[in-house]
Image 1 (cartoon, helix red, strand yellow):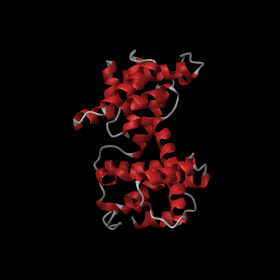
Image 2: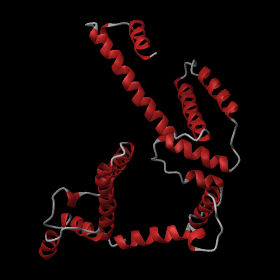
Image 3: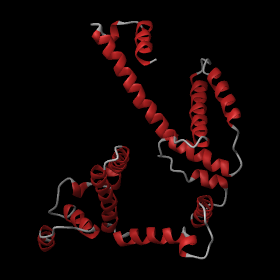
Image 4: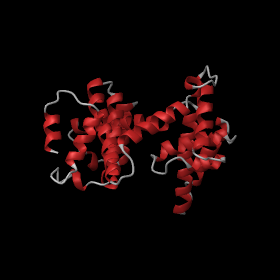
Length: 262
């Protein structure tokens, strides 16, 4: 192990195999106390956080930030792989081999004789091959395969998209009517009924966003950011008048809100 450490320290540039070696050293008997006790479950949320940080880098249009955050995501991939290597289940080469094979199989129009000269045909072929390779025999199987731990809006949008492939696709007027009925049902005093209707509203909104070629997660993210901006404008106006927001009534705060944001 000491020879490997010396070899790594002498390098000016590294490849993915070096990254795997570093993780294995960190998890070795004389490695890092933190790294060597981690499990898949203990670091799974770190994986998700790193992916979100890549998304932030993309939104910021920052190549420097993206380069760093992609490295963090790659570390997560290698870390989980090393754990499985320790368990004699698979190695990094196996992970890379599997994804290469998958890409070749799912692109028969590039690596085979299938004709596909537009995006629609490519996606249709992709879905067909995916169903075959994953043993999905029914449309329900395709819905069940959407990961349960996806963000709820993202999952809703994917579920409605896959349902649409089976023919369950209403027009926008139908969805708007369903939203109106669900909103009226919110007046019910039964909490379970209200929860169900709120869920219906959120799902229908996600489906509408998809049909309008919008990403529901991004739409809500933009709204969240806009809300913060509006809130800050309102608070600044209140403070400029020497007042505290919590000391004002909702009607007074609403007047500030409208004055600053309309």
